[in-house]
Amino acid sequence: MTDAPMVDAPMVDALAIRDMSAGYGEAIVLRNLSLRVPRTDIVAVLGKNGMGKSTLLKSIMGYLPKATGAIALDGHDVTQVPPHRMARRGVSYIAQEKALFQDLTVEENIRLALARGSDRAAAMATVERCFPFLLKRLRQQAGTLSGGEQKMLLVARALAVRARLLLIDEITEGLQPSVVTTLAQVIRDERARFGTTILLIEQNIGFALEVADRYAVLDRGEIVDGGPTAGATARVAGYLSV
Ligand SMILES: Nc1ncnc2c1ncn2[C@@H]1O[C@H](COP(=O)(O)OP(=O)(O)OP(=O)(O)O)[C@@H](O)[C@H]1O
Ligand SMILES: [Mg+2]
Image 1 (cartoon, rainbow, N blue to C red):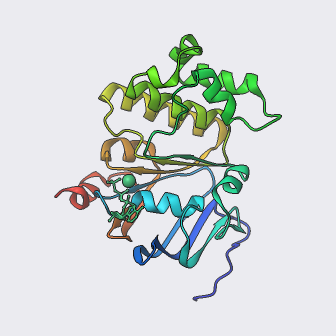
Image 2 (cartoon, protein in one colour):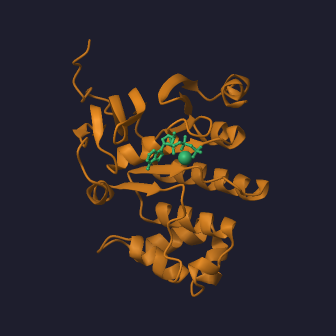
Image 3 (cartoon, protein in one colour):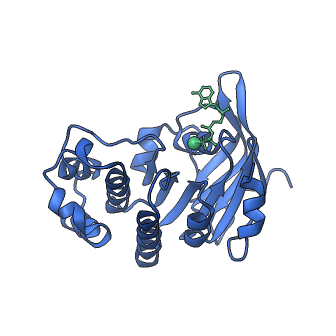
């Protein structure tokens, strides 16, 4: 069936991508890509450098024009929705390039991410629960945090806004193992507590398969494998080895 409805009642996926092609100008990077993220699931997309992982998240967020295909959020078509409106619809995006306001304080970075009228006390409670060290650093300029601390602030900020869908691009890149372990625990705990739906991009197989329920492998812009993460380590490692 080529023209199945985007809404599959009664279970509507948090995110459903169908036959999407996208890229930069003439260069098509993603080809006929389809991917589903069921509500409250964590899905990891793995792949080597340059395979199109970041392009996938940028396409979902509306940064790139789509050549073909459709994207639905909770059953609603968002194929042409621009980034700021995706954010308003509850999609939070942690880009691979650090995106903190370097000159502003930790507290200002968190406050600016919150929508008007959102519960600041609850947001700060999330920060305290996930990364308590940040509470002692609220007045510190974000740009003066270490690289790992900045990554933790990015995650704290994304969790504090209570996104419906969280997109995370290679958060573990360059982090020491103990921080990676902390991040894995925080992400799983917050999902258990709030049912946050998460799509994460990774090259760290251990982290990805520990945190996620399902995985997909991206190879030159196409999903070439996928399934439950349990017992998938050797299989996934085969795709990521050079
Ligand atoms: N702004 C751009 N203009 C043109 N080509 C781009 C642009 N950004 C990325 N590309 C190309 O698209 C392809 C996929 O890039 P992408 O950043 O999605 O890869 P990735 O899987 O995220 O890699 P990495 O693991 O290194 O982050 C690459 O060939 C890259 O050179
Ligand atoms: Mg990337």
